[in-house]
Length: 274
Image (cartoon, rainbow, N blue to C red; front, side, top):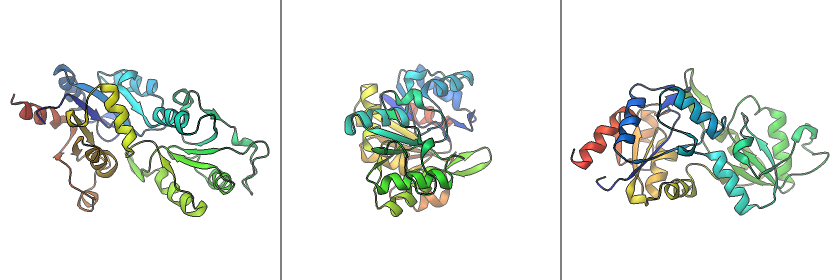
């Protein structure tokens, strides 16, 4: 902890819920910024672009801009360029994230036969799954299933089963992804958290090593334990999607557990001897 130079922070459930700031979160981030630590907001959010997220957070008082934010869609674009260069992709996602998928060839699935999943024009090379929403109906999922049966690769931005909103827990795309994998006998390539490459990208942006960073999240598996496996110190907060039963059943134990992000500056001060 005394060697910490940067903090990686999940957004949804840590700083905000339904984009409304959690108590003390704005002031806590301001204090962390003032201390000189590097900051990266790392999120699996797939419903908004980096610019949109930054504008919303800045409007709520958080000292951030788009360069501070690393999203699963942005990492996915880089992943596709490296691992599947030139691939024709179809996207199953709730929200417009085309801006953060620059360079990705996205096909229009509108002409696909909903009964058979057969594309009347072009069969995609990759099915990309983002975040769940109303778009995840039977017809869309069946089209994706059809593409996978004909050899398309499956790339998913995350495996989140649910997330927290002001209406409670809501089902996320990880639940549908499990069904697609099982039905099509195809294992998804994951680009967002908990993929090690996601955390490595964030560290590279900040110019720090794993031992010089903290990861703060409300998802014990995807945020905290995944970061710890890469050598980053993990901090679990009891807000957002945190559930005591998930904590008890987790595959490991967080390095630190806090009631909320508002308590993080005190933890950092104690570690630095302030």
